[in-house]
Length: 300
Ligand code: G3I
Image (cartoon, rainbow, N blue to C red; front, side):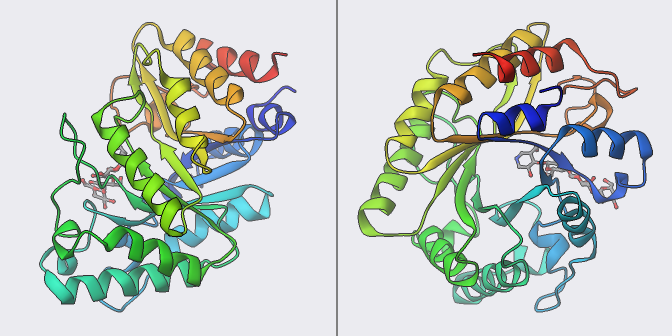
């Protein structure tokens, strides 16, 4: 097929992009979004500071603009994210202990209930593991409420929206390393104990190369009985097109790799300012990286 979304669909997968509500009025942006992508992730608008700016007062306006745009075009939506140590509202940043845990749990239930039936996959928990060689949890206000906060969040999300795939999402997990192995151990434990987890997201913010064991790492998670998704792909550096092709082929080679999301549309939309890590240039022209992805999606 001639677009990313249609080509991925022929392989039983989706191809998505992170979207900002504030750009939906930009015709060049929306033209590419509507043509190329069949999945959408709100880049910021579903985060805690946006959806519950004051405790108990929920605000879905910007997220709804994205969800409604996507659904009216038949695109699926990835929810991002219910609990994360960053982009919390000030009131939550200042809480701890039981009060914070209760607020976290209420947030998960309220947001997942509001969007019930509209979300393909939720990043229930984002970036809860530490970088480096320890393989353990990241210290955060969320973690300090007790180690069970992640499984509690997954159980609440399942109860609120039984049809959504529930994902754990993180970065620097692209190869077999201490961090990805820590997550692997958690997922294996969750599956053994019946904690509802359906997928693991690999953000894949890359520069110039991808670990040689990228596909093997996706596969070892898939072998635990969860889907895997590439959730925030962007690739800086001169080897960009080649690495985009490699990542796309790795996903296609793993049966349970169900989709790829790039973290923005044009280079000028990227959070990685000046690194030009996306598939379209600032004028909306397809880059070599785009052609590499499209070719990979249509191979075989
Ligand atoms: O909306 C306000 C605007 O009102 C204000 O004038 C402006 C001034 O700084 O800030 C705007 O908020 C910014 C927001 O993006 C929306 O543009 C924040 O400052 C800025 O920090 C925020 O950055 C986002 C970042 O997450 C926050 O950590 C990026 O757009 C977003 O791409 C990035 O996405 C994360 C994923 O959620 C998780 N994985 C890593 C990824 C990249 O950091």
